[in-house]
Image 1 (tube, rainbow, N blue to C red):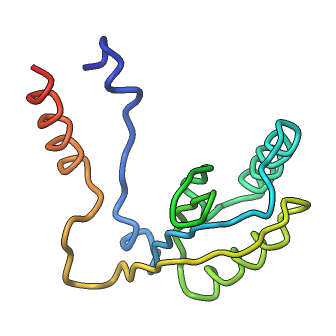
Image 2: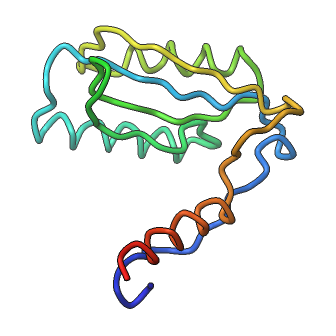
Length: 134
């Protein structure tokens, strides 16, 4: 799978709860205008600077499409105050003109788990893809 480009890298999916995080947030963003190349470059620079300042809650941020939104972010938080602080920062994200956002918060302390993000669930998915393509 590596040779054929199906596997790009190896990484670890930690138990965020054991690391002290209580919330996983999925946030959808809607910006008033499309980003041009210069704005994308600026956004990457600002995010890179924020990451270098210390622990940073955002674990994924991408442009996308769906539900009237054009951006998505996954973040982990020690508490609701941490989540609120990140959302306040995101709203002030220089000149990208955030129109609206909506978040779905997952309580990581919840005992009932349906299908948590793990490598074993991802591996099962990849195996079904491989079988379908054969």
